[in-house]
Length: 291
Image (cartoon, rainbow, N blue to C red; front, side):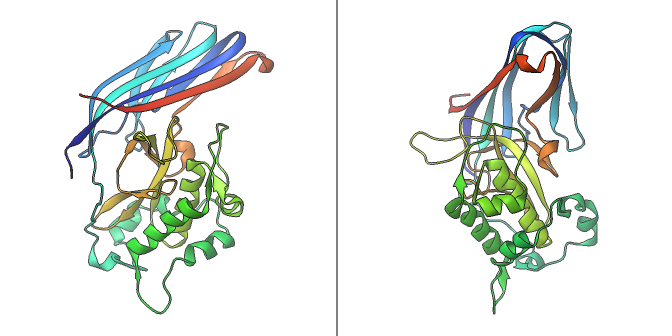
């Protein structure tokens, strides 16, 4: 693994209303997950109006969640997060997959299987997704697990059209397959469902992506989404089908979950006339600095 790259992530979300409204509880997942390949150097969170109470918790996935409650009405609600981190990248990772899992199909051990039930459970099974997933299986010879997953990741990057969407929710996997287009979260959910149809364990990842100058990487300027697949011996391996990235290069993990609705970067409630909502502006920048 190379030496660290020092990155600063600035994530600002602004809700605007035509008149003062009241705010319910808001939950934020802005703080990256510290690990052997990411070290958090500093973190600052500014919220306007100032919450009556702000506290932190770890959810069931050990994601860091900030929870704000408000007593003041306002016509604008601002969440401004800034974090600096050291990011250790493996540009061409080689994974020590257990020999029994190097070729598909394989069977997880009993201990692994019992822990991975939710990571293998499909939410929207569909025959078209099954057929598409099976198209990556080699015929007449052994199917390398990593080759299968690399080919599927590359197929989405090369054959699907990336379209940034700001509205909530994701397409059903079969719809993304039919449209041959979608956002990063649509692509992640499609690939999660496809690999689960093949018996593999996968989970959704929400975070950020560093886009170097003059780079063709998609997903910059907003939060990003990809997936991880559990491969015995290698553990949870990152796959970004939006950019055909395997490994953590440029990827900054914030939250992991079995499904996308469990890893929303920001969600909350407000009370007021429905017509008073003017819109949401989200700006994300990831820059390389000195720590």
